[in-house]
Image (cartoon, rainbow, N blue to C red):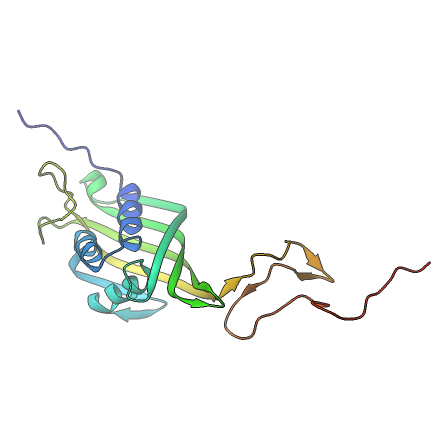
Length: 202
């Protein structure tokens, strides 16, 4: 007797698919998850610029742990929203995700891996597309036919080389004593190292 398949909600599906994609550790795993997530024909706009499917795939690969220069990646979703469309319930609709990911490079700067912090607002159109490819992440022969057909994304990236580990968190003359370092020279708090000492008045 056939049993109805209970699918996750649109936001749960999208969040899980995105997390699995960006935290993929191998190119093979990334490729399989990408095909299970995006339709063969997908309309992509990133920061107002149209990208092809392959260009967007490369953009996401560079954010993922499977990227050629990356060591690991973690993703945190801080906001989500969905609107169902049509008469197919959770199979079709709009999904909005606000997420932050931290990507650590394989390369070291001052003995520590460089870190890229990605912040993004991601709006998706999801629709049932059937078996476009054989999904590699199925259980018991069941599959989820939903695919992303439209992407509209705003994204920013910040690069931090290293956070000095042995300086106490706090402020010295209004300057943080645990600086996060981006491109350029290391910034150290004032009066760091030997120098004149100011004594309190007697």
